[in-house]
Length: 366
Image (cartoon, rainbow, N blue to C red; front, side, top):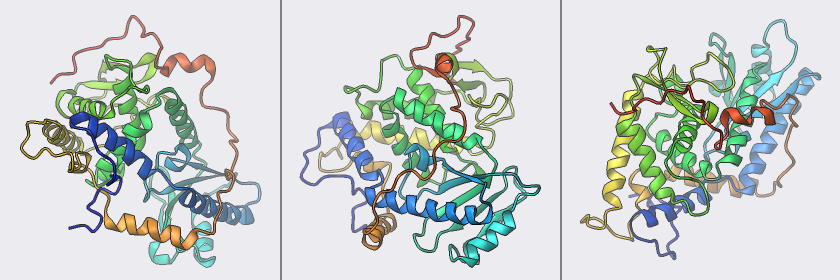
């Protein structure tokens, strides 16, 4: 048995409520537990600053930006740091940067990978000092734009982060969180959550929202009811479901920032993803039922579908012990690109936007 009982977010001195109330309370506590501490945030900032300094030593005019979960704040303890270097190169300097990272002690050659044949060439390595994984790409500003969109959506839907963080942990421990292995990207998952909230029959994500009920309903929708083969998910114009044009994509989610880009085209394991959501719905539905023989307020409900490994808990403790001298520093880089949308564009994705009368909303039942 795990020495931490897999559920370190639970407060032993707190009396959790019954059923969905207890599940809601656990989600609140999980969210507070999983957020990066000031020390963890400082460690990541310091690492980004070191990489930024290295890149500026090589190319003084280059711009370095962070994107992904570190920029949006939706990061798990073992999340990668995504960095993009923007500059003028006749040929992307993948091998030059790889050599410098090794020479300056950022990483061993055994943990350094250059993916130069992919659609988006990238350098992947694990930082020797902090053990944090880093991905560096070049001249790909769409990642920064996507991160800014997600930050905007977080401000519009106050409870979005709590739902997303539980789902990210859920997918991570099942190996369904990476597109390269057929899973769902964080961006796609967030679009699914936004669509779910936009089209929900109740006004959600306020101080009275029960996140236990919300999580159950998300699993019910995408585990039991949603017709993946015929329907596409759109968050534009207030959100809607539409008949798919691209029948080859396993999960159809048009990118709100790049017309023609299907975010779900690489999610080839959509059957396994749906089965995982279905499993979670059935397990949680049984767990919140007070008539269930195994029901007990002393047993974690949320812990029946997610857990935190001892490895992650030990890693966080090691980070705090090793880097507690660090202080939180200012953001490494200011935004250098135009905001991806303006106030006039809010109608496209806003939760209060009126849907166009021509929007076709078919049944989502199989």
